[in-house]
Amino acid sequence: MTSQLFRLHGANKHSTEVEEWFKAHPDDLGYIAWYWFDEIRAAGDDVAELLHDRCPTACVGDIALAYVNAFKSHVNVGFYMGADLPDPHQQLQGSGKRMRHVKVSPVTAGDPEALKALIKAAYQLCKQFQ
Image (cartoon, rainbow, N blue to C red; front, side, top):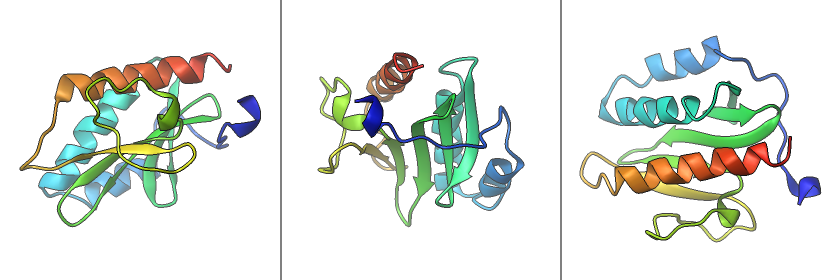
């Protein structure tokens, strides 16, 4: 699996590009994205961030962990190794080889504790490959 890891270089503890992205999204969806990205940041002291494909993205070392993106009516909280995560509450969506995401909106908040558990599991999975 290490050959399939998605690696990103240039992540820092705090990214001005990421902060600018959040400033450019001052609405409810921007706040939801910020909230969940802050949860991702808090997963571990070694989580770093950068803007990748115009989305706030978190890494553990150079291993891509997760991202957030705001759309017209929802926010995606995406996991680069989402296909390998335990998902007992069946929150993850997507059918690609590796990535999965959870949709969050002001109307459908989903299960916040289950999403926090996914973030924790994704962080622990990244740590296995350092």
